[in-house]
Length: 129
Image 1 (cartoon, rainbow, N blue to C red):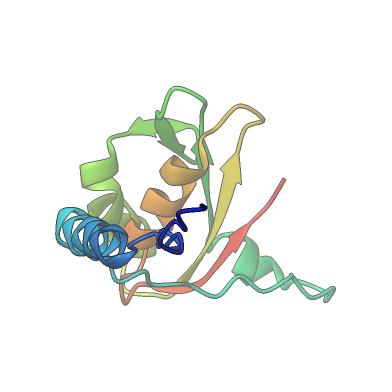
Image 2 (cartoon, rainbow, N blue to C red):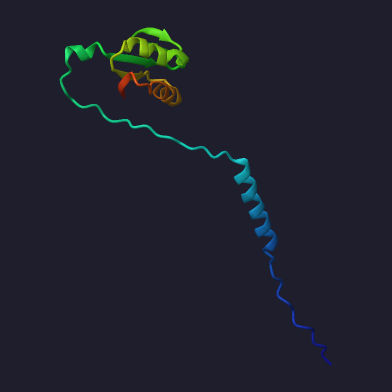
């Protein structure tokens, strides 16, 4: 006589706990992360045009070196004093600023300089090689 076994139940994988863990991780990383508002700035290529001799005097070259040091027209300047120095050099007129990073300059240093030269005395800003 054969005794029949009860039919075998298929074991089901419960995903409820997995969904709970994924949701908790999502909430954790959303709360732990920092949401920043990134702002941009316009960088337009220079136009080829003749420069008047009066405009040459209004061009200020800000060199950004690899160690984060700045010099304005050859004179060393601190980043905190850059806007004041440009205002003094402008002397009531608008100036053009050329930011010239050296080959090993960090991009963040260049961006910091561009943020600091956003003052009324600066008419145009450009990045040159």
